[in-house]
Image (cartoon, rainbow, N blue to C red):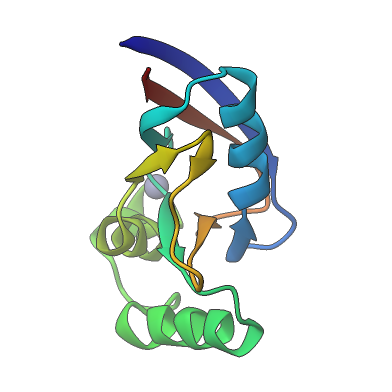
Length: 136
Ligand code: ZN
């Protein structure tokens, strides 16, 4: 078994933005020439998330609207006494900061309607994603 560590830089342009990183991760996976194993995609930030779901424009808006309904941006939060992004932290905890998935024949083993997204919850910023690839 071999282990590779890679990074992926992502520039976002809005405060809340869902960026489809499926192709970027596939390209990184090809550079290591492993045929099967597990890939972990980890966001090294506490106001962002990594999710797997369908890339459909209306659904992405539904997700944004649901985050706003569950964790409104303009609410009273303790953390906002020292910062102004408590909603982004809470949303990040709900979505989760990493995903692990299998790959086979050098390709991500995603379902037909699944894509991999980086979710910025306090952009716009440049974000660093850590990718760990384990396999043979
Ligand atoms: Zn903060």
